[in-house]
Length: 611
Image (cartoon, rainbow, N blue to C red; front, side, top):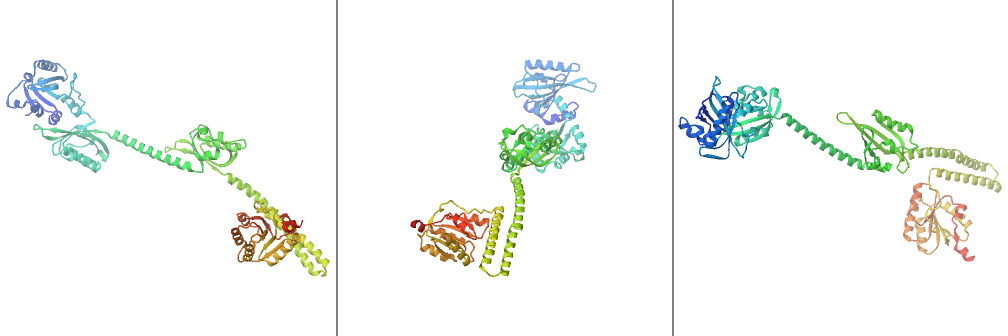
């Protein structure tokens, strides 16, 4: 059936959408047009075979009265479209009725020639006109408003996805012509701009012949891209078959960009949270003390290392300034001023300074303070690092002391030792020139002895300055004042053995002395006489099996006798290493003399028996 009055594009779209009941009558109420939806659902298809049928005759008495009153209101001057709620038409009764919008149709001279009715079946009872903002509720007047809305784009497609209509908003928004929108040309702006998978989804929705909604990119002038929210509503023909789509497009670029911006910000916050977590993990295991402050230099966070260095915890420091907590009586005023200046001027600070532990103990630290700026170059606080340099400062003090010691050593070597040594050389040369008699030799030998004693004393003093231990006691005095039967001498130098034997016999004439220049023979003697009470003097440096070898083997024997190291070595490592043997009681340096021997307080078991 053809619409009998002049048809504008807006009404054409509404008719082709086939979503509402559309009926037109003449001025007397005779039906002269109904769309496919009205013909099928209201059973008005018989109108096609009759010349006229009055619509009021299809209504019940109460609805007929309301209908006539509504028509009269429409004919009033400057009257707007009226709404009418109809419960039943002909033999068809609707549960919640149909809401009609009725508008007057005028000719070119603005004389009334008929009425246009656009209605929709209600899904719930209402006492007011239908909500015209719903997408499936598009009465004629509101469709005109919709198509004229500069923000909404409308395409009408046939069943083959060919565009048959596009509203003015599309032409204005995309600067396109009628030809650029018709047929399938309008799809190019989506195909060239949207992601391939999004475009394929769009085509798939169109093929499914169902209502859909999709966000998709489109190209505008100058290849500028915008985001559209496309709402697709299928159109149904008279036979109830799919007949195409009406597409409503809304520019959501601002919303989409805002959503993307929020997403990026959320991702950035997530990254920052992860980085902050990493920073906290790194800072928690760092040996460096780390502090973060706010813009007014109040501490907001510190790591565990700071607590280890200063003794202060997080609760004690938060909200306070660094110089208020860590500085003390002997902290230099210039250092405190430097900290304050860096805060005022937002400058870096790097220096060594004396601070104070919570306990009041002085601590030397390397103090580093740097201002922090965000990505917009806005100042947001300070980052402070404290390195404990206490050991370094102690080392510097020790170095100064060592330099002083070296000067003393230089004095000893250049004066005391050299003086006596030249004297010995002079005496030995003089011997050759003197008469060879006993008295002369005895005097010269006494002078040599005095000089060698001074040299030996100077060497020991020098050794003390080098920080080598020269104490003649190494372990507990478990073997002091021990009664012994024999003394064993072990040294590869036979002359030294003979001289040492003479010294021992002079001090302890009644103690038997066994002399060995070989470690194996000495061990054999000790093993063969396990019950003999003895003291063993052993040298460390041998050409074959050393004194260390003897000590290792002796330790296996579990002998009760103590061992005395008699060596020329002043090496600290030798002294330290010897302390691992529990049976060693003394570390003595050559040559053995009577004074050293007397200090051992050796008692002869034979002498005690005689006494």
